[in-house]
Image (cartoon, rainbow, N blue to C red; front, side):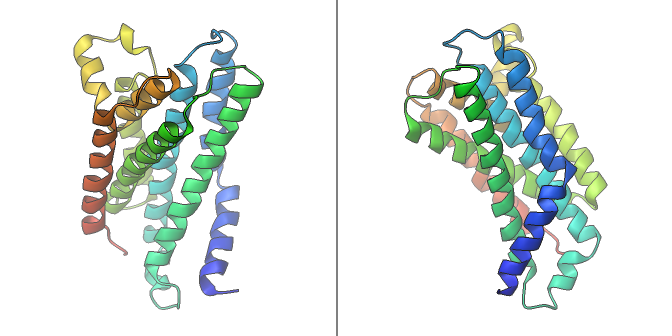
Length: 234
């Protein structure tokens, strides 16, 4: 087994044991099940909301906390003296966090479609593109948090402080139509808000918003570049 394969295997085992990973899986599922009992058959709001929550928890909370903790403990610095470079750890973490997001969203879609009888999108490609762009944007923010946070606790705190205002503006805590118009307009173009709205548009059977796709892509590219420039390995 190569050094990279060993690293992936070890990191996968650590991720499975991580309480935050279970938190990211179960909280969106809990929300879906609790509120799913009262939704109408053609509802296009709850499932996109649950998916956005799942991706947001991983991207803004779990991933930056893990990476900042590794830097704090000197793990990234020690890797520089082994055949496995620190960059490999970053790649492995991104892949595993993406796998976790896919698992969480797959679980949500399975429960929504089979248990709750909720509506699923008819067009798979727009839904997939929206999912990838939204995940890229939120992961980019997570990388920036990891780049700036001095330690794991700080990354955790920054992630929480960002997540809840973004979730509120995105309409994940209350329906957008019950929010003040100016807040709803602002929230639509936040990373989490653009992601939720684009998902909801696809779920409703409409054409995906190219503007929202562009917003998500811009967040992903610009914030990723900033994170790469600011990231410190030790």
